[in-house]
Picture: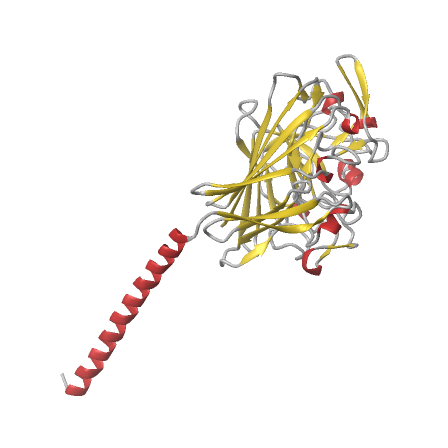
Length: 393
């Protein structure tokens, strides 16, 4: 070997060794950074209510940098920032940057809030329990929707942040007075949001009452897995673990029938693009101007935690699974968004720019004896759990 070639080989060998050592140090730094990064919750002001009470915004962060921002006004999940297939972080929830927009019904169609005392609709805004009729607030034509005029989404909740080794969370509590919005019984409610280190957002609901009442709690997050404000969700691929659904009348109140999805545009038992059949000539889609229906989940046991839905967004490779103990799930395609709402970062929210997957008992159950019961009595505990699992494929 010539002397010049020998020196060149040495140079390349040293360069390779330096690269290897550098790569090892980089991996060690990443691991140390991962270990040093801790689950945490930060609190900041989010504005003031008209009556002078202060509202806070809580940011839950895991060691991967995933964040969930939640306000104690109505328990609104303001944002959920998660990675795509290339590691780029993006907010996948519709919502607002300022409290004022959440106070106005015209700019806040329940973006990410806690819905109660009864999520979804109750026909003719009334029901009978133990022989007594209760008249509720009619805020959806003649019907009652999402707890009424001043439901749980418009209440200031007591907040208690917490962290563990692998979770960051926020416990919210509220006491609903007897006959609030027409519901009987003083209802003590706790909702716990937990962000895990493996990118799951878990919601635990608990309630007790001092009189017989009805209770059906859920969350109304609007998702766009391509990123909030980035077009429509018609290309998202949806799977619903449900062989039947509850058809509705023209007022979107369930008829009481439980209808098989097979052979209809309501069949999402295999992954299907949301927009594939959304404009089909089908009465249910015409009534709702798209999808806005309750699906009956396939359950082996009544309150088992099981997969309810999965959604995949091809361009970002984001995948979301929804697991729940609830018997039903409302799939809504943002049919009534019309481009008049300007959301976070000045984004325009047009029709079908988001979807909702609201785990629940069935709509109008207090008036449908054949539906799973939503009656809660003194001494009983209302308790349900829903988990949104975010990942990439």
